[in-house]
Amino acid sequence: MCARRLIEESLTLCREADFRSGVAIRLHNLGRVVLRLGDAERARSLLQESLRLARDLGIKRLVAFCLTGVAGVETAAGCPKRAARLFGAADVLLGEIGARPGSADRTESEHDLLVARRTLGDEAFARVWREAWAMTLEQVIAYALEEESSE
Image 1 (cartoon, rainbow, N blue to C red):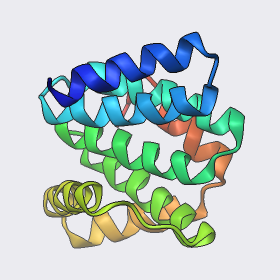
Image 2: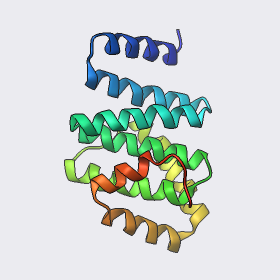
Image 3: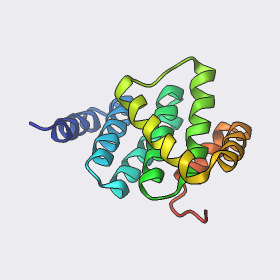
Image 4: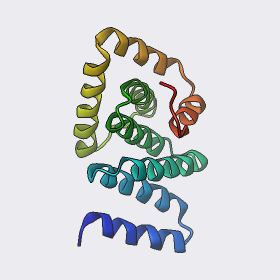
């Protein structure tokens, strides 16, 4: 049985049990898998739903992981500025809470971050990264939940 199907079944069980943190975690995991399978729009929807729940539940570690997930979606969508800003904000949050992503997510994120940096160039990337560090958590969550980008 494939990972996507197992996560979907687990998500259904968590929803039925009203296990909200379990739902949030499984939405994140499913979003990452779906992104790897090439469905960026579904991944965006899943990751944003996870982000909303993580925010509401106060699970900062999951908020940070969702931000990196949405940043990966932005990389896939050809929006390097948004990706870099979200990666920068996730970096801030991870540093504040003393957390690190797992090795698979870290490898994937490092690749997407490198793509964003190369696309933007070092100077523009550094500027966007600094902007991310100046955002509040509420601002960055709102930014990650935006459906359309003017950038």
